Image (cartoon, rainbow, N blue to C red; front, side):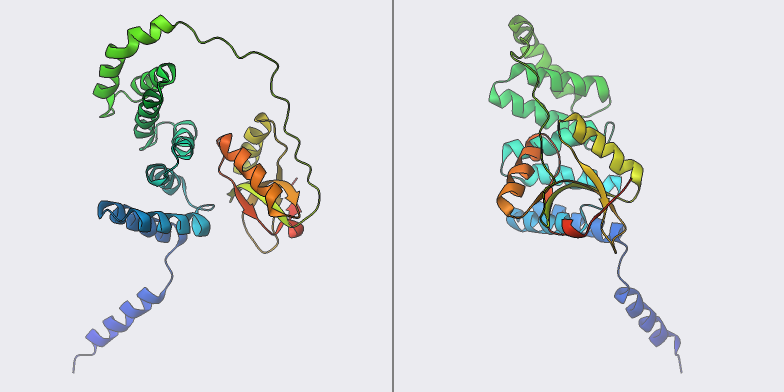
Length: 254
């Protein structure tokens, strides 16, 4: 009697029951999003991607982060939010596999808005930073056609008035807070906190008991209205932000 076949079946069952690592789960979810997009099931693709961001978006690796930003930029119906994700790809992941695509989309978006200076800057950055990109011919054609028109506009005048003062967000009390990042190492959290400070905010770096990740957060609120206002302001400044409800248990790092 051959007993090897049942044994193999049992082993396969065990393998199927073992949870995938987070990175593998994330890749599978993002694969599903792309498959749904290819099928034209855009609403379902958005739902799957939103679930991925809520469940795994704060702790994935560099490649999945870039891929998810690119997918979200393509799926969102709000052009301003799409541009935020595209700018994050360009600024946070220079040389990444999606950054030249992001520059092209930013340039096209600026062109549609009639902002020729901004479109020119994005196309020029694409040529300068990604000379082997498949989008180079499109950038060169646009610059040949509209470059002289942009040069005729002259330099953009500097903004009038004083610099924007720092944004004061008192920590206050309450379990609600706005989180802008979660990291496995302190260096990553401190780097993001520095960028948040440069934007005029006062972040804090914390841990939550029982959790491994180091988190960067702002503000303490007793009601959701204040947290939502801060979240929108941070998103307009180009940061990924989410509202959390466990601020009363966090512990400062450093």
